[in-house]
Length: 362
Image (cartoon, rainbow, N blue to C red):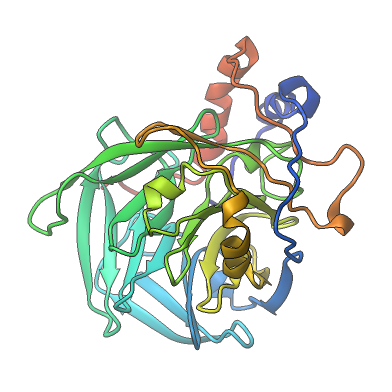
C-alpha cells in the first residue's frame, strides 16, 4: 500500500532487523534456467494508475486495478504504450482492492482483501464479467483479520489468497465452501509459504524486510506455472498438474525484480512472458520465456516432501543475471529463531503496515 508511515524510530528498528549477516546465512543455488533481466515494455503515465496494485494480461489487452477508490474499476491498457483505452466499472463500493486474476472464461476476479489496520470483519472477492457486471462474494478469515495482497486463481477456478506477513510464513487460504452471494463464505487455511530474505534492491521498506512479504501472484495461462512476488523478487513454482497448493510446496525459482519502488503487480502473458509493475507511475517490465524455461528445467527443481497444509519453505535457486550481482550479493536466509529484537519490533512493523486508514470496515 502507498503512504506508509515510517517514523524515525520505526525505521531504526527495521534497519536493525534487516541486517543481513546478523539474521541469516548466505545461500546460492546453481543449475537455474538462464533468464534475462526484466526490461521495460512501456511506461505507465496515466495518473489514475499511480497506485497500481494488480495486473492481468491476455493477447491484446492488459487489465489493471489500483488501491482505493469508491467505485469498482478495472483499467484496460494498451500493451504497446501502457495507455488506458477503456475503464470497466460496476456499482460496488470496494474497500481495498489489491490484486486481480483473469479466469479462463474471461471473467476478472478482484481481491478486495487489503487490511493494513487489521480491523475488517470480512473481505471480498468481486467477479467482473466482460460486460461490466460484477458479483460480490464476502469472506471471513478463520483466525482473525489479515492483510492480503495476492490472489491465485487456478485452472479449476478456485481462488487462493496469500496473506502479507512481515514476520513468519504467509498464510494460504481458500473458500471452505462454494461461494454464494446469499451469505458470507468462510475461508480455510490450507497451507503457508515462507521465502528467504534477499538483497535485491527495491521496495518501500528498509533493508531486506520487503523481500519476504508477499505482494502479488499470478498463474500462467496454461496453468503450469504459479508465480508469487514480494516487493523485490518473483518466485516461480512448477505446477504441471495445475494444482496450486501442491505447486507452492515445490522448491521455487527466484527471479529478481530490482529497483521497483513498490512492486505489487504480477501477470503472465499468453506466450509465457511474465510482467511486473510497481506503484508510482513506473514502467511495466517483462521477462520473456519464463513458462518455457520452467518446462525445460522443471525436472531439476526438487519436490518438497511436506504434506498438503504444511509450510513450504522457498529456497532460492540463483537466477540473478551476471550483470546484476554485486559483492556480498543478495541471498541471505531469514533466521527462524525468534529473538527478543524481533518480538520488540512487531509493534513497529504493524505501524508501518497500517498505512492510510480506510473510512470504514466491511
